[in-house]
Amino acid sequence: MKKIYKAERVGSLLVVRSCLEGIENKVYPKLLVDTGSTYTIISQELLELIGCSPATPKRKQRITTGSGYEIVPVVVVSRFHCLGKTMNNKEILAHTLPFGTYVDGLLGMDFLTSFKIEIKPYSGEIVVQDMKDSL
Image (cartoon, rainbow, N blue to C red; front, side, top):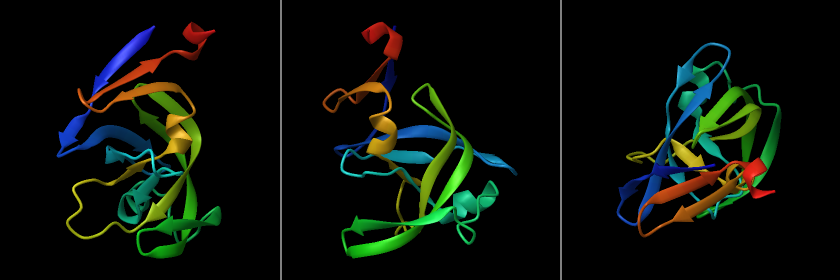
């Protein structure tokens, strides 16, 4: 079964809503669909709100940004839900986003490649197919 989600268009970029649950709270960040990002990245402030402090990370990860290399904290959120799919105990990278950014983070390839997802940039549609339907 296929489900079609309409992403919000911001210029030529696509933004989707997600749900992030931690031990203390639940938040609904807006994420930029980023096929150039290896990892899903959420602002440190939102991770703090749900009780997943970047000050006590599970580990650290080296990433490449537009300004060079950075070492960022990796935290584990209880539940991550986006595009009708849920991942429990999901590793998320914490990063401070530039001031004035209209999103709360990036939806990276670590999530996108876990499911059968087709992105249609022209229409702004994201098609998600159940894995069992593709067998």
